[in-house]
Length: 198
Image (cartoon, rainbow, N blue to C red):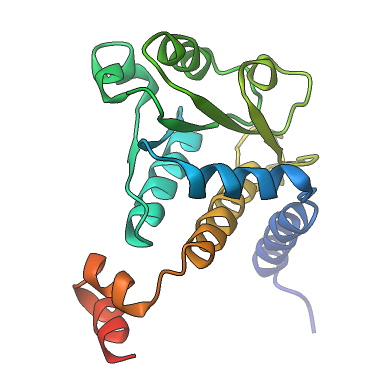
């Protein structure tokens, strides 16, 4: 029986993304990041450009639903007034696979000028400008995109997503957020019903 080439390719891509997630070098920096998020008394802000920006936005949404208020700061809009979101004591999580995204680097530099206190970077390039600009860096590990052109960011985005989810859930557990707390912030839909029923 012949193997369907489409199914085989899909399985290959899924395996590549799963392998990239499994290869994330989890070390002391991840514990430090959780400590910083738990201790943050200002806002938690997230930023990223392009597809990394979608992950940053999702991270902010996940933190909010797990009772840690957060906002997404679009790098482009930040340079046109949205830096007004930043206050002394705020913590920024900056996503950039290359660590060279100009808009993200500018947000960090300008955010520092208005009081941004802590920056956590999520990056796969340890020698990048982002690493130099951050207080702490969470390394994504080596990334090989399964795209046959080597261009479409999918494994890198899956890794960013997994890192954000791991941080958010660990912070939630450290802060002892229970089902009642979750349900107060996620009242609607199936999850709201499940939280209220537990």
